Length: 53
Image (cartoon, rainbow, N blue to C red; front, side, top):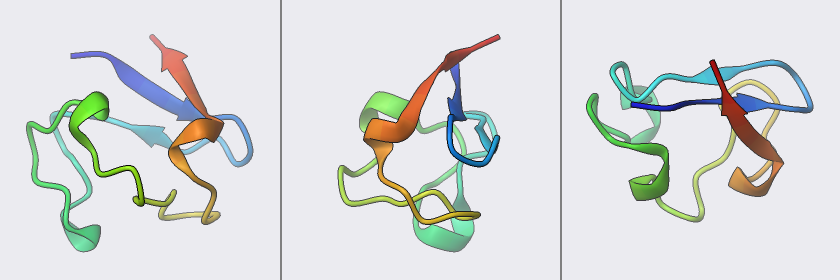
C-alpha cells in the first residue's frame, strides 16, 4: 500500500501501521482514513499529505 508524507512536518502515514492512537487501524489505506483525521505530529488535515515511496 502507498505511504503518504505530511508536507508540513515530514510525518509518514504507513497503511501497514495505521494510526491506532487516533482511531485508524493497521491495514487502513490512506484513502480510507476518515476525512477529519489530523496528522498526529503537527495537526494538519489530509489535504497536506502527498504520496511518497
